[in-house]
Length: 357
Image 1: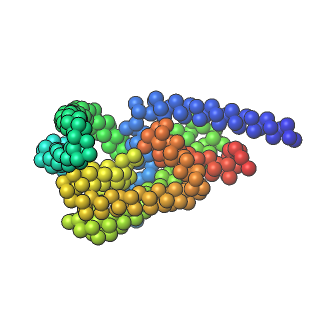
Image 2: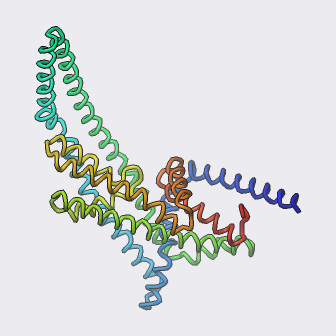
Image 3: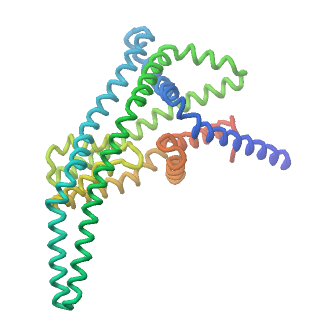
């Protein structure tokens, strides 16, 4: 009996290792080429429940309801992205175009004043050291001035490079939107065709995986909507307390930006804090830094618990999965690895796949 268990364990282990290797290679190398169609499939699958509900509730044909639901989905996403882009473009323009003049008018005079004070301090202590300090500071200021200009030019070049990639991005976006319409409209027919290619047991397993993944995707959306709502509430309170004008709309834009990995709230809060401090608005800069730190700490505590609780995973497992996934696959891995771990746990509990006890 022990030998039989060992054989089964080894077979399952090597089977899982092979599947993991193929999945890694596919996600790493093949997925970018078909990403618009994969995203369209995921979106259309996630919209099936709302489509069925609205179609049954109001007596609308399913095909027409699918078209309307896809239109509503992309219109909502487009509106939110447009609002976010307006804020980001204004902030980026202020940072790129205003930093050289900010350096010339405020930072450089402050450095010269500090140099004069330091020179006087060394003159009182050792007159021979004053000349050396003065030369070092002059060279440092010239080097810093050149660096500021170089950074501004690099930023402009980066923006230009990003702008040149926009046509390809819009082609992929158009393909994704068109594919979503057709997949949402003909989802049942396409799903039936795929299922007919598998034997009965494989068909039942695929249906189980599909239902679980669609439900898990909706759970993830709900979890991150809750996290964004908490972030919005924290930012609204924090920005109002430090006296930021239009604190509620600003908090909403930053909370929407919070969904992005790596950048998050820091993509807006850190440049805003630095600009405020450089402009001499120290109370605002310190206040923004405190708000950002509070929001970041609370989010890092709540995110693994909320997402892991919804997925049925321990917070540490969720955090590790998110970190490893983000390192390997970027934003796809950030969400995909915890969902995959949750799926494996579910398959193990249901008896469809034996990995552990």
